[in-house]
Length: 148
Image (cartoon, rainbow, N blue to C red; front, side, top):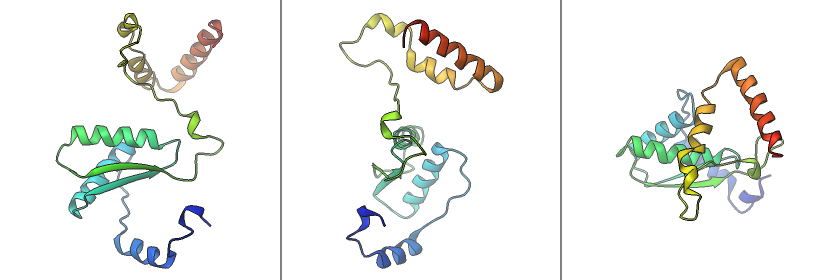
């Protein structure tokens, strides 16, 4: 039982979903999945897309959708909306998500612009294997020296 669907005639929805659903099985990541979805929406002449994902994954889905829209202009010209599902990854919640934006606020310490933290975070994801474990251990130790 999904409370959000309590007032919806589920048999009608089931028939509609079976009629229009497409199983996309080739994408390997969120960006590829969004691009495949945009192509499918365009082919079906959709004017709106709703991204539905767990609250812990939805921010990245929306960021990927914006990036795909920017990198592939014209693939899908419709509006894109985002809606969180009722489920999260096990033992996590939406407030566990951290979004690291580029500096943009007018009241920021502009001296920190030369140390682009968002780029450092992005670079940290390129560290692989045993090096990643060592990096995270050193990073954790550094944070502890600052009582963070």
